[in-house]
Length: 102
Image (cartoon, rainbow, N blue to C red; front, side, top):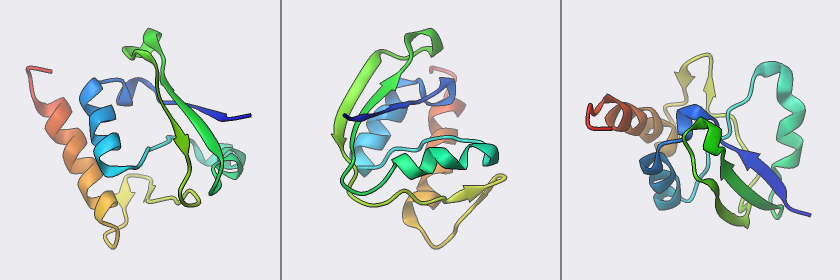
């Protein structure tokens, strides 16, 4: 049975999903008290990714298989500088949500 990943309002914009597709990565937000959520994101697991319509999304947007175990690349607003995606991610979110046309 695939694991469903719901991306919240902050990832509801279609351009965010396009960025995830292009980079072959998905950012799954969680709070520190939800670390058990990470145990479901292991290499080889099948996933269904949804952006809830109630949060500006389009329902199910993708299906796939996790290619590597999940990693934490941001803690309390501090992004790892040794990971190219961790550097690109906040820049891309600023570009998307900083554009008044969006």
